[in-house]
Length: 338
Image (cartoon, rainbow, N blue to C red; front, side, top):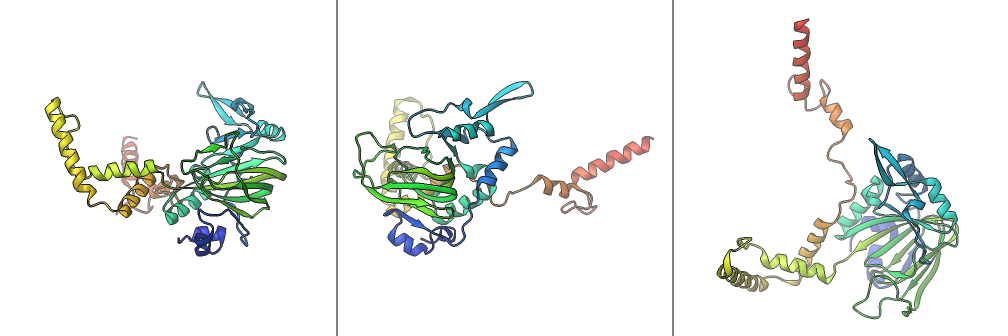
């Protein structure tokens, strides 16, 4: 495993890969690791006015549902009422009542977080997403649960107590909250301070409780492959380089298509190695995943405006782009008629 980005979080990546990765929860204390999204960035998101559901949610571990209208407001745009816009005063009131603020997919709408996620995803060759939790002291947003991802937690503010339990005992384990009758031995108990990093392996049950102050942490979830991902990739591999009519007409044509498809699949199956299937599955999951905010946007409005100015870059021999030359011709024609 090679990942300069992950090294900022866990230190020696080679040691981490050999000792903790997908085996053991651990806490790390980087020298100076600042979260790309913090309370100031949260305030800026609220100030921007466009933060809305489903990117924000308020949750409680005691099965008390926090209705959307309890932390959002509506707005009228062009005579139409739209619901679900974040309301800071309401969110603060819900926090004081013990609820946790959960921001989903921060990488999709916050550029610094998107850049971090894009780098980590490229280095690990896995899908990565970012979530932000804001919890009052004594509050717990989620009950003991298991995630289908390796989780890296960076404490951004306040203090939070984490309880990490053992790996699933059965191979066919379930996601989400642990059933009432299931008990899992505790593996790690730790209070995170700002700047601390917690690693929770995929499937290890865990919960977090606000310990002091307004506790905020950023979670990066690193998704790995499921058997269904492998099945889908295998089906695509077996059908590669085969051209068949999409809708064969008649039973004879359908039977012929079955024979052709099976014969091609048998030939392809002899050529596919486990490594080929793994690479194909990873490529397919990357292609199907929502893309994080691009590190370098392909084009900006400001850059386009500069390019369209007379004498700007890419404006051609006369110092004007096609739009600029059109404007000049219209201006000259208007002057000629004066």
